[in-house]
Length: 544
Image 1: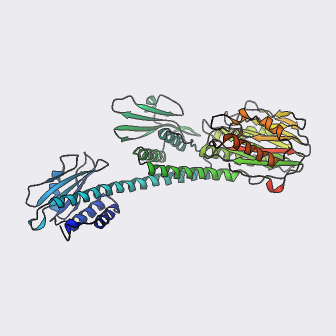
Image 2: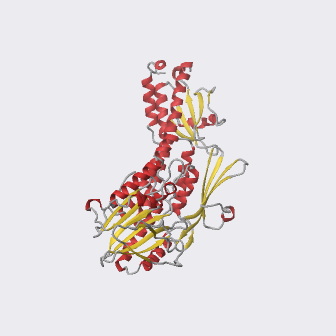
């Protein structure tokens, strides 16, 4: 060995590992390791070869003597680590180094210069460098996985952004506790597949299967021409993701190359997660979820009004408390050209980007058709057709549409399967605005759609709300409405202004849930007749 060869200190090892871990590929790594050996030992020659798997040939990556390539055969006999001496005038020995991904490095060491003996100190130092080589290869794999994963994530973000801009539907389901089921649901949503299956096969054991949205005969559909599959093997288990029947407006169509890329990206993500890179995977998962939640949140911010119009003779206030996982609540109050005011409150079934996109569709369609608004039933029927054409099979929305004639205080409404708004009359009775048609998106045409009417009097209070209020749960799993009926709450606070009324309602829900995670958006709109709204508090967005 060269200068103070048997007294290599920690600084020398740190420098060598830094050089090895900063390489860009296995060839670069091999070249750098060869230089480290030449700088620290008096080997006459060195050759380093790489074998990707048992079925691949050895590939020479670094050598100081091309003729040493013929000696790679000495490394071929085992999949285990070994370092053996060779009785050859030009060679000292060879090393077989198995790597974490089942590839191997074969290192042929030339004889020491000046007929030096390979002492125990040489062997100990060489072992340290070999350990550094193995660790540097793992770092290299980690960087490659990170690069591949970020590429797939950026591709998905671009696709999501494109879907937002063009208004094309997308479905993304809320994350579940099981990563495999969650991945299956998400890839179905992004590719518009109607169903999917994940099969896990280990040895001769019965396969473990996951289905979405429900169990079906996957094997019988394998060869119908409308399926894509991607599989990988991990820890002697084969994971097979299969998607079936991509849906479009033209019906069932074949999957395209982008769909396959998305499916492959998801499989890579799942594989990384299952390799127990816990901390790294958790950080990536959080970043991905935060970005998708941010995008969905931006959709809602654009359509939920920051202020509400002032209505002479009425006090109006609204609140919206988004859940951690973006839902599909929406409300608005729109002044019409003839002096009337149009109210809407809606709730899309489900969560996430797909729900936000459907709300965005409702918002755009509603504003487009209000330009020629005459009749509530006509506009509701038209909105139903649009939602049916835009939504996936399991997406629909409930809503209440109402129109207020300020001059006569007449309220007309259509309730499309939504929680019934309550009118607290000045005499203490409560009127429910019950459902008068099906939710939007169930059927292409509504079989029945009734427009109903009532007259508001001074002192009457009208509460629109979504099920995020009535179904808010505490840590015991109890729902707010079951323990604290909204009708009783309204009667107890009948003299409050609209803003104070809703603030009091949120505070009571907060006390009831007592820190339990909010599972759905909380949205409410309160209209009180006979009062005027404070201009500064026309609308307020609150955080829990």
